[in-house]
Image 1: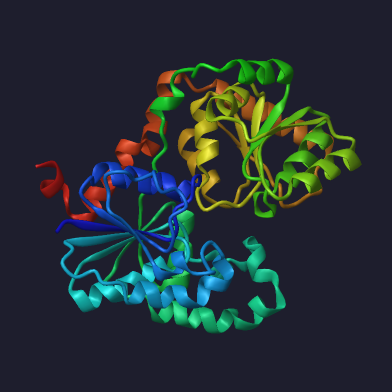
Image 2 (image 1 turned 120 degrees about the vertical axis):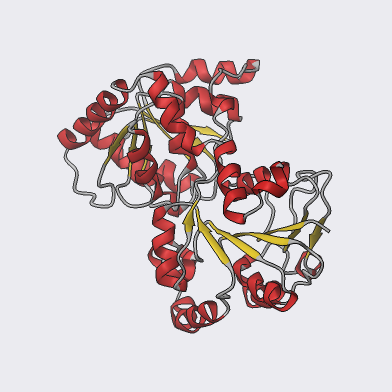
Length: 377
């Protein structure tokens, strides 16, 4: 019957979806199961099934649907499959219990144990009074439904440590796939994107992510204002108005590029003097992409972005969480990042980056699952 790929929910954009994209390409005969699918054409050629939540009023409403998720995963019918490969950042890892009953091996790729339970300081959803009240009970339930027979991988050493604390498991580190080949050449820009890029000009710092509180773009704006540097911010999201207001209050020179195409965003990053990445992320694909584009990065010393920076060496860490920076410290960080990046030859940069390539991800994944001979032979 082949394998079953399990994913929390399918969205048009997202780092977790990029991981599942690589799996779907490598396992063309695998079925896919998710809670709901909001990008129906994404996995053409695969049988994609949704849970009953997809046809209910709870579709897309992650918090109200949470009480039902664990049971859906634990009681999923996986009989007849050769293996189950789960992409989990909420509760999809509970599918291990379904695998136990069916005698099917389950492999969980943890983007993170659910941050709203195990890293509440990094998740706004965990800050409400109700969430703080029920979190201890939910943590106990989450740990209870971790199957000792399930095989675990984590997308960074940072997440591996969180998984050990949360679930008591020893996960193998397999970095998520980064489409490095697409970053080697400059993509053509249409007339609109060319005009936007021309208006951006030169001489700026750059940040790019969804405009959400946990992405900490407010710290990027404060850093640029402190350093007296111009900042270009790429993305979109619910925090746009708040970020614009902050820029006005700080009298910061900030230009917002809303919902740029991939080609335009990469061109803007490539033209930046340095890429700012203040959040504490589980991995952080965009800083890896920035280093591939030859741009020095300045990242938070906590989290997976610092881990990838340590491997590649294309920038520096900066204590964004501290907040008590001086203009001199901010400017020194920019200079240090540029010098560190300039010391890398292109050949050495790409050699180090190859650890994050999509092919390297799949190769390690297949070896971890013990499928190398079956898939490649």
